[in-house]
Length: 174
Image 1 (tube, one colour):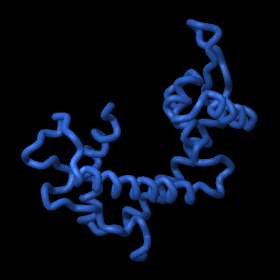
Image 2 (cartoon, helix red, strand yellow; image 1 turned 90 degrees about the vertical axis):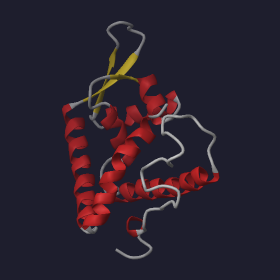
Image 3 (cartoon, one colour; image 1 turned 180 degrees about the horizontal axis):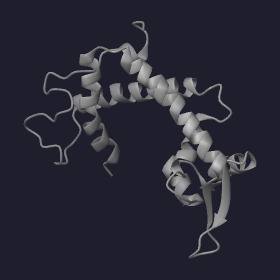
Image 4 (cartoon, one colour; image 1 turned 135 degrees about the vertical axis):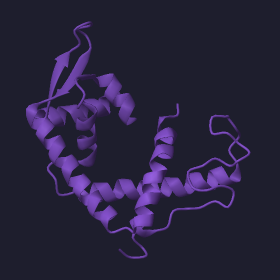
């Protein structure tokens, strides 16, 4: 890893609070007006998330499906989904998701169906080939990330692990 490597940059710290904790004068569940420190943290977090997304895209760049297609396959892992739900989850318009599903269906990774309660509703589900492709793509990413984590110090790995509960809360807040 080099100093310019996004995975080797130190995590931002705040003098006001330890990483992953709210300042002592504010409870995490209390709504508040974002401060300048919140804005600065958001900017740093946004840059790191961009780095992670681009890094994972590069890992799968030579694969037969795109990172976005792999993400759609992951959304179908638990079972058939409505096209409108997929579009909303991925932050795209319905025609964009329809085009994505068309490509996945053409490649035999997804099959379309109809909602049992409303035959007008189009659903998509993984095929066996789609499940295999999803597993292979996920394994490639996990192997890559595991290698990156193995190159970190014990302290850095512990810091990443300690941040995961806060990230979960951050990403599930509505």
